[in-house]
Image 1 (tube, helix red, strand yellow):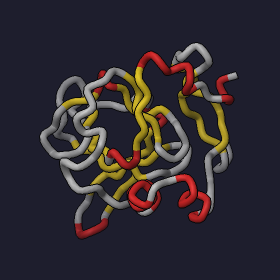
Image 2 (tube, rainbow, N blue to C red; image 1 turned 90 degrees about the vertical axis):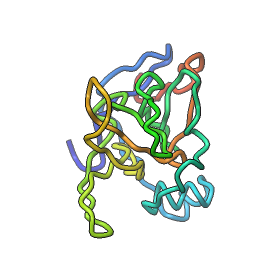
Image 3 (cartoon, rainbow, N blue to C red; image 1 turned 180 degrees about the horizontal axis):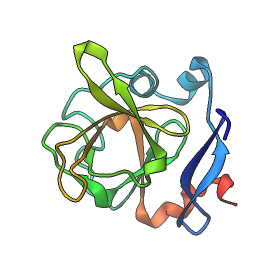
Length: 164
């Protein structure tokens, strides 16, 4: 597969997660991203920023549904994998599909961490740590400004054209 294509799982018209399917990467200029995102979303998702703890709009969300990338709409996490980590950011023990989240070594600020990115558009989501609950032992610590949320009853509205 070439660099402008990715294999990810997406929702079809019936609201079922399908794939992995081959689809185009989403690439835009900073000016295009700035038109689409709020300043806070741009700073976090495109500028690799971090929102302040305990301030994100999705931290205390208890509704059933799917968390998608704020930039390209790729499904990333489900409410079934969300847990209260006490850290101040939405936390999940696994992504909706391993293909949809990319791990990247992050050595910023003199630390060695694993950054997580959206597989389709490279949006910065947060970081993954090895101190999460069973069954994975992982904690995907994600910024609310990198996510959008859709309730479980509206998953068909997330249908991706690439799903056919």
